[in-house]
Image 1 (cartoon, rainbow over the protein chains, first blue to last red):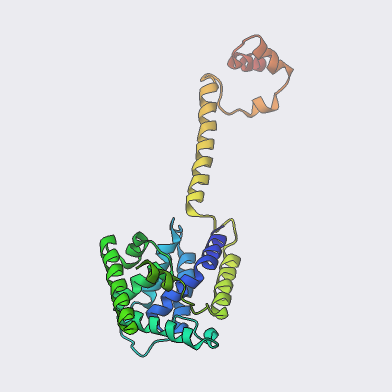
Image 2 (image 1 turned 30 degrees about the vertical axis):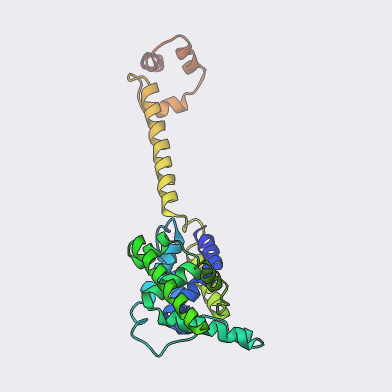
Length: 156
Length: 109
């Protein structure tokens, strides 16, 4: 019963969890470890949280929080650029967006990935980041404005 | 802003490595083997099951206490052994079981 729930949760959210972990760590091996840690933590719990999603994302964050800012040698792409090899223009476009994302700042980038890419709500992100919903919303808005500004600069 | 969000949503994300899926499934299977379905029942269900069982047992005990007359012996192997017609007749005549036992003892003696 519990195992089925955890298994279903993993199948449904593995892409989001992995992308988030990869965005924090910048290394696929570390991201894999972080997601695996989440599953182990869920199995260790006596009672599963009612809403698994924010809990799992927070676990990922806790698992990588120690080294995600220290290690600047990271930077594996969160995007799947290898499969776009046939379209050079698309690769440039996507890698530009990723570069810009890395320039908006850690906090804004984290919120943008959780909200726009992984589809979490502001409330869920607030639970993950242990901060207020207003802070999360303003980080998101600020991050998007920065991204928009960078994109416009590039177009000009 | 919405167009930008839309573009972000459509970014081609790096796919999850197969190795991770395998690791997770192995972990789940190993845990499942160590803690089979019944044991891995969620704690709230355990609490509910225990509470229901306790409630049932206490209810039965209470029912027995209320419905059994105070004068009757609460536990008597004689009752079980002597579940015969004489016993039934004693009740049919609205005799107290105590009387029945006394009378029966006299007859035996």
